[in-house]
Length: 291
Ligand code: C2E
Ligand code: MG
Ligand code: MG
Ligand code: MG
Image: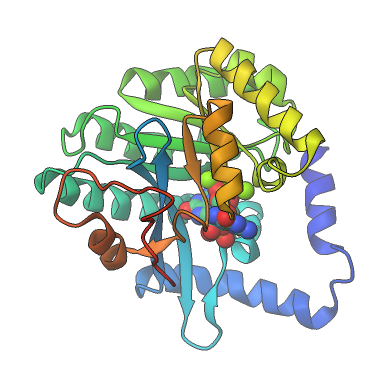
């Protein structure tokens, strides 16, 4: 029933006209070719550790460099890929790229964790599970350095099975993060059921938390709740210094947002990190990297 409702919103989404619909359908037809021909790229957005002002991890974000349409943002094709079963090959491709980059960082002595975004419905997907377990047992990446950011865009069909699968990944050294916390469905029960190590507060609550009392309350109580459950807290969408200052004061663990750094192509990330183990970033000396 859920599935039907979702595809109904897909086909009748808002004022989606025929031309737009055709464009979306043709995009999906092109995605397989795009993966094979190298149009899919990985950008990395740093996460800042607030206790010591250091970049300790990055989030991998997919980009599609389309030959005619230019750069296509994931919001346009990820939901479609999820609904048309192309999310598995896309995520497998991302996993491969990310773990190669992680292996290279490790060889250079960099201590850096990396997060991959995984749609909730892919958690129990067989080929994804196999690929992930192969990576985690290969010894190519440091134990604990890969983070799965689980997005709640869809409800988890079988929470018991998802929890069991996630426990297996965790036991193999993978950290599990709940993405976009506060905007999805059944979030409180997921917090109890899933073997999480991190919670990411959605930028909707974070962005104005230093200006708006209701948002501030949401962020503070989420940090309390997460810490009470033994989880680390990441805030996303920091666009101003005032917001960063507030999050430090509120005891948030990690912060991510345009004020710290935009998502960067690998070469720019490498330039930012230099060849040293860890890079220090403060609000006074933050790297001024543009896209
Ligand atoms: P997300 O995982 O919540 O990623 C954060 C999004 O917020 C990214 O958008 C990032 O560029 C953007 N962002 C970061 N800092 C700021 C800020 O300070 N202000 C604002 N306004 N935005 C900020 P992006 O890259 O367009 O990705 C959108 C969503 O697409 C992601 O949200 C994630 O759910 C999904 N996505 C991206 N890459 C992948 C992927 O490889 N696989 C899957 N399944 N989903 C992906
Ligand atoms: Mg994410
Ligand atoms: Mg997020
Ligand atoms: Mg988001």
